[in-house]
Image 1 (spheres, rainbow, N blue to C red):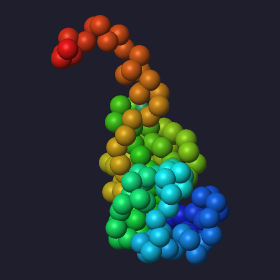
Image 2 (tube, rainbow, N blue to C red):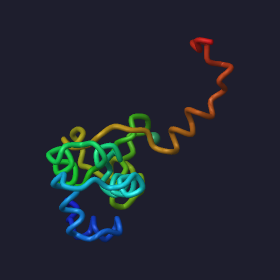
Image 3 (cartoon, rainbow, N blue to C red):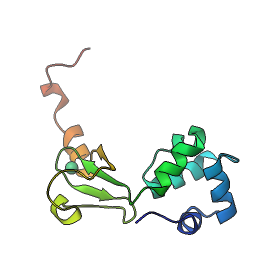
Length: 124
Ligand SMILES: [Zn+2]
């Protein structure tokens, strides 16, 4: 399901009128608001600060935006703000068309906690 302007406005703490101005490119959100909008919609704050109206609308109007972890294949449901097992989130047969790739906190932690001294390809 796509997020509605009403829900977006409520979650971001602004009026619906303001949301439509953001979507039309008539107004730009401040940084903290852009970050909030980005978190809600699963987009980047820069999109709200610098993106074209087309880009912003496409990002907001697409069906529930999801991120897949490239390591463990769990999926983040942006609306629910949690990572779930791939098999529960999407049917088998490949990635949904509008999914982006990322790294979940667990795998990110895994990667960064590896002993850096063990890593032979560090430059300096
Ligand atoms: Zn992961």
